[in-house]
Length: 135
Image (tube, rainbow, N blue to C red):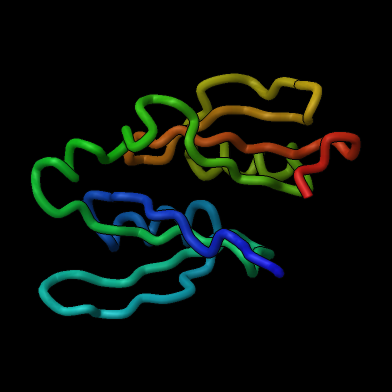
């Protein structure tokens, strides 16, 4: 048996702003953008080099969902972008204007730094050490 996590929903204030950030700033691929009618779309973006995981960008619908934008995990880091070259991606993200909350730090599991997307979601950029590989 094989199972995998296909997508995680990220509630955003606007589809196109989110697509621009993830594809232009982070170089994700726009995998799907399907009009579902009534202003809803099925929008998936995929990190570079990834075939198994994606974000499903969902436009907030109503006050309760708008209140969750940027706080879907109660202020905790809720998203983890794994890289094969931390310092390359960290430098590119800084150059693209991504706001990091801290300097890179070495942990027993690898190199990591917390950053926020423009919607307020906290992320880790992480390169796992070979002894602590997430695979």
